[in-house]
Amino acid sequence: MLMSTAPAPAAPILSVRNLSKHYPLRAWWGGKASVFRAVEDVSFEIRPGETLGLVGESGSGKSTIGRAVTMLNPPTSGTVAFEGTDLAGLGAREMRRMRARIQTVFQDPYAALNPRMSAGDYVAEVFRLHRPAMGRGSAARRWPACSSVSGSIRASWAATRTSSRAASASASASPGQSP
Image (tube, rainbow, N blue to C red; front, side, top):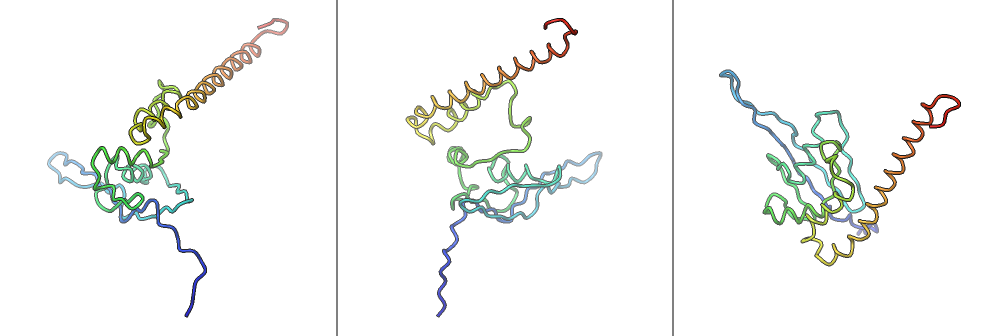
């Protein structure tokens, strides 16, 4: 009888099986309608302590996979399970709660971030959207710390901007003149 001393692998936090995402293409000028296969048969697991980075050429399906996994744009076929829960079976309210626990960083900050919003606005948005999942008391305790970080970010940005202007003015001044 053989006994293994190695610990059993932890259950996956995220399990994606045979994920595919297709988009219908309209027929033009009497042609036949078709399907664009953006992602086809992708499978992976992420276990506790692991990080997954999707790397590929532009248009290879990285963002499509991310949106399908978070059900922002549900897959055409396949399964996505987070902590053992099949995400396709969740309603809108449950999925919103689940997204509060899923961490996704999309590749294009211009598509993901609104330049009119400050860092503090984004921090506040997280609390506004996820307060029910966090609990009102937890959000209230965390807000002062986040507000302080946001203020530090604004102060740092303003100082950098001011010193950049001063350096620019100094560099453009004629010799013997002060800026």
